[in-house]
Structure formats: C-alpha cells, structure tokens
Length: 414
Ligand SMILES: *Cc1c(COP(=O)(O)O)cnc(C)c1O
Image (tube, rainbow, N blue to C red; front, side):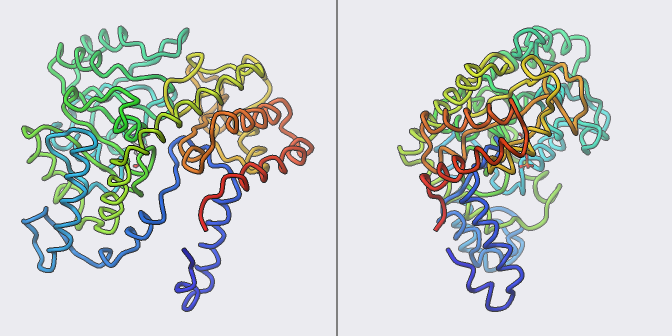
C-alpha cells in the first residue's frame, strides 16, 4: 500500500505515514497489546464507510443511506458470533475502554461498587483507576495476585467480594501471563450477587482460536479490543446474553457514543473473517508457543519471570532479583534504540514508580504475525538479555545488526 494519494495533496503527512510503515517493518514490535493487521483490514478501514452516519443498529438507523453500513455491521456481528459463540454482540465501541464504560453504565448507578485487579498487578485503567471515569464515578476495591506465585489470588478475591459486596467483579487483565480462571471468578460473583465482566482485551484472539479458556457463556459480559491478538483494527467489542442485549446497545449508542466508526466496523468484519480461517488457530497457538520459547530463554539467561513463565502471549520479567540496579525504563530505551519495542511495566510488589518501574512486559502477537517461530523468538530473547545485562550504547551497537537481520528475514508490509 503506498501513500502516493496522500502525497499528492499533503507531502508532510505522507512522509510521516511512510516513516511509520518503515518503522514497523524495520523494528520488532513486542508491545503485548500490539499487532499488525493485514493490508485487507487496513484497506477496509480506509474505505468510504468513514463518511457514513449510521447512528442506530442494522435495520434501525436514524439516517438514510445505511443499506451497505447495515450489511457490513451485520457481517461483523455474525462473524463475531461464530468466532466467540456469543448470543449478542455489539461491534460499535470505539475502543475496549469504551466497551467497558458501556457495560458499567448498563448495570451500575453512580456510587455502585466495582471489584477489580490492582493496576500494578496487571489490571487496566478502565477497571476503576482514579484517573479513569470508572474510578471517579464508582466505588472501587481491588484484588491482587499472590505475591509468592504471581497467580491471581482467587481466594483473596472471594474473601474481598464477601466483605466489599461489589456490584461488578472484573476479570481479564493487561499484564497477566497466566490463564484466567473465569469459572472461579464467576463463582465468586454469583456468591455475592455481582455481575461478572470478563475483559479479554488482550486475549480476544487466543479465546477465539480456542487456545485460552473462553468466558463467553460464563461471565455476564465479555468485552475486548479488536486490535490486539485479534487482528481486526482499532476498536472494541461487547458480547453478552440476550438478557442484557438492549441495555448494552443503549449504553453504547446513544449512551456514550454518537455515530459508529463504520470504517472500523468494516475492518472488524474483514479481520474476523480472517480469524475464521483455520490458519488463525495456528497463528494463535504459535503466538503462545513463541511466548513460552521467548520466556524460557530469558529464564535460562538468569531473568526472573512473574509467575515463573507464561500460558499466553506475554511475559512479564521482574528485573529486581537478577539486576537490582537496572530499571524497566532503561531497558526499554536501550532496546528501542536497538530496534526492539516493548514497554517498562510495574510488577507485583512494585518498589519503584509507575513511570520507572522494575519490570518489562513483552508479547509475541506482532512477531508471530510476521512469521517468527520459536527459534527466532529465542534469538530475540538473547538480544533482550544482553541489553538487560548491559543497557549501554556499546551493547546497542553490538546487537543492532542482529535486530535488522531478524526484521529483514521476516518481511511485513510492502
Ligand atoms: C487494552 C485493554 C483495554 C482497552 O484498551 P483500548 O485501548 O481502550 O482498546 C481494556 N482492558 C484491558 C485489560 C486492556 O488490556
């Protein structure tokens, strides 16, 4: 895909767009929430549907001219139902955070209570952090991961649920490397009469492919982003039962959004179609296999992983045991200079600040999209280890060629 059409009228923007394509081609994206969509998804996202006002839902719009928008939204809905087996799907949320907002508004009144995982233990801002609307409007209590094992402390969750008596319990996380036991969270929610919101933003693709247990049919509400492990372009999704369908549809529109971003809904339709192909199951399994290979190599090189490993697409390394004087930010910066992009992350029991935390989080969804296998991921882990051992200009200079070579051996966008 070229930006010649943009260049004709706007060379400045075209230059930046070309730079971003080159950056993605030439560097290794290990931000665990990122991925690379296909050219087909990008093409759909840049379609004429960006022009439509399609307020409402298929067959019940407030404006004319929506026959095609109806068709594309229904296609996205039908494919999502097939992928995740949900009774009711809303594909209009502009993002995962807005999907969560719509669910809260559907079942909570201001002042009601949310129980969710602590942000520094792997939770998400939209689960009730004070900086997010949910933390300002609702009363929030947090559960944690077990400091010894790094696994969600389900027993502690159950006990806190009993004392706090929440209206919603949120499961699903941003920096959690282990399989989530949705049944167990559901049992805790049922015991106190709370709704269970399973936010599978990170693992939508793994769940769709059956390589992670599904909360659909277990939790009352399932939300997600559509641009992480499911490669369908930026956006959000809500899945629920018929019982809550109307409530959710109303809080998405008109509750929190105006016209849906129909071009992004088109991207979702195309991306979901790709995910229905059997090749996607292999992709999801390879993503997990790659994360395991990557994590094991880090461990062989002396790094400590939160929870001791991974069941999914990401690893969270705690630098403190092996490199107490090195911070996540230092490693993040040196790696970025070398061409590997991941993020510094807080770890359970964090002793530094959120801006300069003690861990790094790395995911394999994007590398796997460009064809990385376990061997290639071990090579990446070797480079990451060398930078952790010595986050200096010299090491960056040493490893840069190997990063370039890995990128060149796994071509991405033309
Ligand atoms: C990424 C993420 C979200 C939503 O992110 P958006 O950027 O709003 O799509 C929500 N919950 C969790 C757990 C996430 O990791």
